[in-house]
Length: 230
Image (cartoon, rainbow, N blue to C red; front, side, top):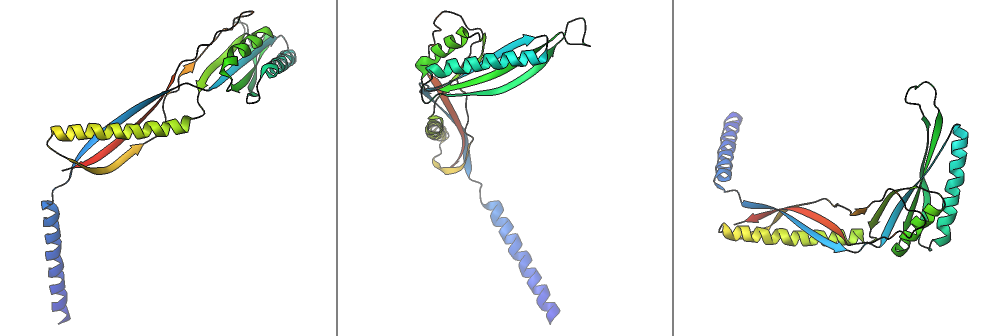
């Protein structure tokens, strides 16, 4: 009796399995449209970051490091004299490397010390003055000058929303051309990030006012969206 019950139950399960498989095979997969939407927002930067490179060379390592410390301290004092309250100034890196003669790598002929001073300010109109002051106290190089905005996160979200709207418009146009109608979004991929417009300088002029012309920077975002269509 028990054996007959098990056989019947097993047979029923097989029938149900085949029925489900048949139903799954008959049910059509939904049509999908995959689109990448992009959006760009142009904005005037309100933050400038300047990197100054303080370099000194001497025959002795101690002398090179000592002269570099004096020169860096002189630069920091000069920058702070014209800095506004929101200006941030700090040293961001120091290294001391031997200098070898091209004909001999056994004994260094001297040492080079390099210290990086990083300045971040919202007083963009004073960037030229900072550079001129650095030149006046003997700093001969600027590592980089980059403009950005403190509204970066907010603007990236705004650009991402516009990118989704653009993706939806493209998907609707494609669906119409294919005789379909967009039903809903079934997948959306978004990774924040985008290019920052840099302004870079190498040599700094002495005894002249350094002109700094700031243009708009772009905030770019993209999204990948999969739409279900019918």
